[in-house]
Amino acid sequence: MPSFAIDVLAPAWSRALLARMPEVHEALEMPLGHGELALTTRYGLGRALRERHYAQAIVLPGSLKAALVPYWARIPQRTGYRGELRWGLSAR
Image (cartoon, rainbow, N blue to C red; front, side, top):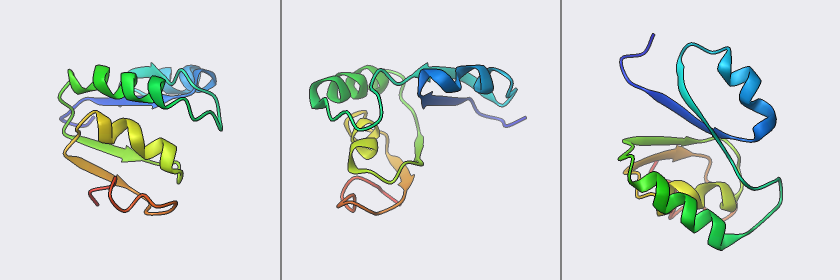
């Protein structure tokens, strides 16, 4: 088991899978579907996650939209792919 908490922000359909992973502390439901931009919702989600003071975010989707939430959450270490003009949003 890791010595830190791992929370996962993912689609609702993946919650059953995440519940079977003992490493996952909390599965947070992504309120938006694939392809939805909804900048206001993404910004609000980032602001809500900011209160949790996460140290790192690992962003697996390669889209610009996926990188916005951890950026707005002010997570200092953001790791992910640099595609789709994300160079300023990923810290690594």
